[in-house]
Length: 97
Image (cartoon, rainbow, N blue to C red):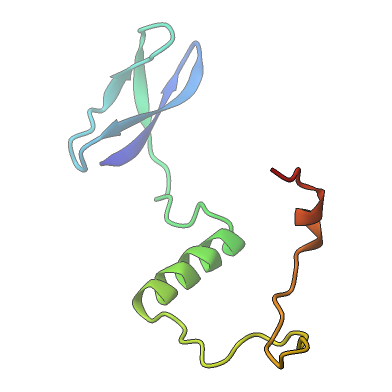
């Protein structure tokens, strides 16, 4: 499905979603039902901001090649010699059952 731009003389621009190559030259305005002409615009290939696209790309990369953890994260060692779990200070504010 592709998004096509139209401009109504009364209500201004609106978008119409149709199968690629099947969009009519005139569309019906969704607000006033008047005929509207199709407006030619450049393709919307990169409408997302770069940070969002980087997050999507990194998520796809880890889905295909997950990172393998070979050691515990650095932490404090308790009296028994094992690594103690680091507590999140924000969790201390939660009510206890």
